[in-house]
Length: 301
Image 1 (cartoon, rainbow, N blue to C red):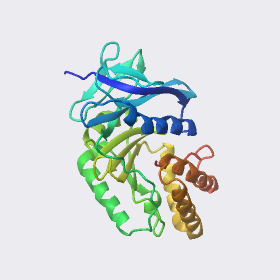
Image 2: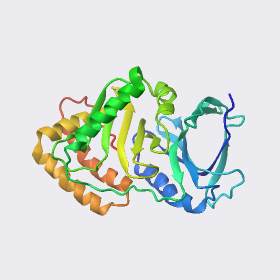
Image 3: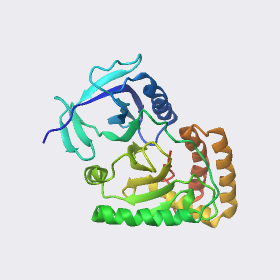
């Protein structure tokens, strides 16, 4: 099978392993802001590409940037890479999704290439917290039905979590959904080629698979699909959801906090997420049913 050669212009960094850190937020955030203005693309469409590998138990190498035509000028402080040629053979390739996974110098990498970029549009990603809508559970159910029909036996449990799953709680109008998988290796091979197109984005985010659904290319987000095995910390979000359902006073306090943070971080989704996670981790520490070592919470951008 013929596989592509991909040219990437961006930057690399050694970042802490595990849940996304402030250092990682700064690394990715700076490239999101800078590269669209400094990398000369051919045509109107490109893709954000991310590569990552474990260096040691505490750190990872991250490479992130925009796909660019061969020979495109590399801005100061950035680097150009070519993937898909020896010694970087593709392990598997899904041509209909334009994604794949390859090996480099004996280390496993994965390609995050389901984030289309349209030079004619501006990304609609502002933080907006809205009053609770009774339509949110309906939107969850519709997506869960679609996932069951589309992915079938490749997935297990599907759960609605996050603020849109708490009746009466104000939230960003993005439906958070947890989807059980047997392994990340299996999911990358079997699921990603079926969740693709201009409305989909795939990110290996905080050590779990996050697939973002938008209403159009680079338009407002509609769903976050989180794929992880049942023993993964992302499933702790179910405990937080149930706690907020049964403690309306805390839910009201959380709603007030989110309104304040949305006003302060309207154009900084990463900053908003980091700020509110302190409250969510505080809730996890109160929950006696969690294992003592299971107080990690991974929430959405």
